[in-house]
Length: 249
Image (cartoon, rainbow, N blue to C red; front, side, top):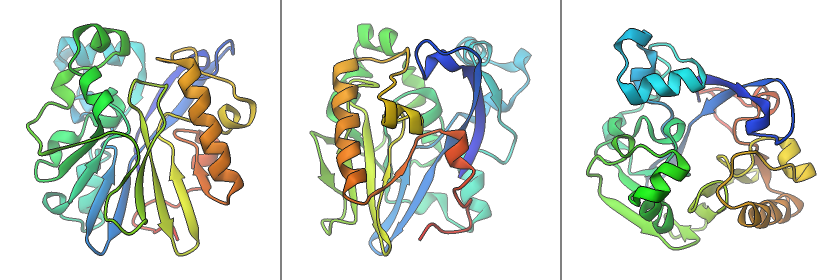
């Protein structure tokens, strides 16, 4: 699901490049027989309000990024359009704690929040909060927490795996989903663009470049093994992705 758009300097995602990039804000629903899984929750609906009504934090985000985010594009509304009960999601998996991935977390109070432990710790460390641009009000909602230390099989059957892809942030994770047609890897911001993976062209803003390169190496291995790679917010790739309620098979 496309839950709004962000326009930012291209150098943020491809270091050294000029110009701007308009990127989608992707969120995903995985419908498993044992429960529904959400991967990331997009931006907070406050970003849909006129600038004069924004609080200081949200106004700063709106100043740094050009946001295109209309009423009805927030994840909760997208799911309701697909006749999905937002109160019945079993898991909410956050790739990491940046505003455009956790802003809708408050809409899913009954879901268990699944985050890498090192990401959660970073999101509660004053120095790392500042260094990584976190905002605790986006993700501290008292969810039942499942903190992971590395790879984790959500249902115990190999169909939905949390895969650590550290580097973009201290504890970034991707999600590997096994469909009838094979594996799909939802990379979050571990791999912004196809160029990121093919050329190992890192973004300007990265928590740990060495760890991000290691993560890209693992993504390359999965791709070589046949996994379909969903290149985070790559707008060119995103044009090929069916939008809900259409299913990816």
